[in-house]
Image (tube, rainbow, N blue to C red; front, side):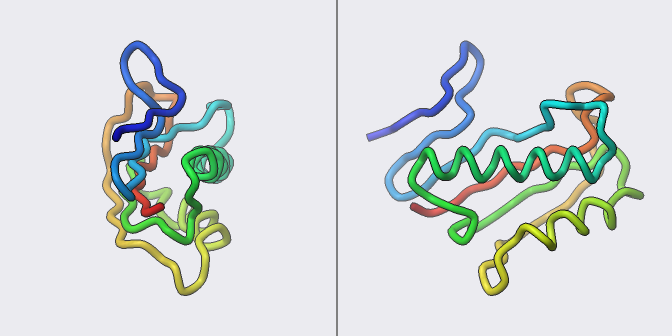
Length: 114
């Protein structure tokens, strides 16, 4: 069985298959904020979507962080480190990438268990 959340014409924001939750890349709603503020928004979106699917951040098994400018790595990490649950840190990669629009400074994709 496949369950989809926040289904749109192009993609769903979350998909559950078996005991795994796959999130679409999450970006900030308010792109006027700097990378720290955008990261907080993205992490909040992740929390919301995981909860809707019946999971939470302690069950994230992998995360990929895309930064428009890798020089903001420490600013993003400052927010990540406050958010991530000690003892439940996922496998993670961070890369610099051109995102869908220059206004997006960070995008995060996660996979979690139920």
